[in-house]
Length: 163
Image (cartoon, rainbow, N blue to C red; front, side):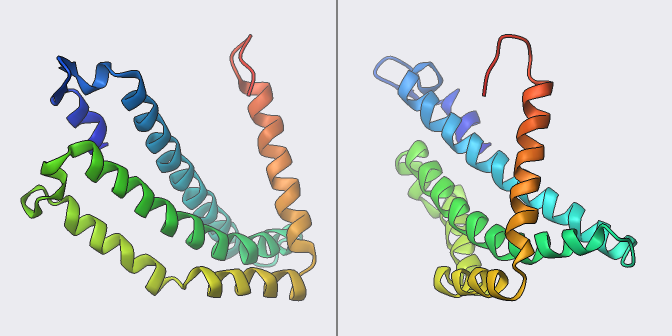
């Protein structure tokens, strides 16, 4: 992550930014949003692959319902998240992050187009409502998937660590 690397180089108030707890919290938040977006995107890609590789499988109906819901949700979440993370990145770079020569303003402008290409928040929200209306089992499939992921996570966490 650009901001994380830059924090090891930029100093403020006598030490590097990477030594400032508040800045570390910001970086951790940015990393969490990035990781969540990546994992959501990879899950959606996996479900699409499952559908394309076994279109007649009995379990595919549930996966299709899940995909109908996750597609607009994934577009909405990642499209908004990238803009928040890039805004924090610009801030973390200070004045340099605002300069065109850093490349960050171009990334920020490019990221803004996601909401246009993938659908505005209102359009994607309407898409989710349509999924609930036309595919009532989609919410059950989503709930089941979330519970399975939480159960897996709890059983795979290191001893003494709770999520």
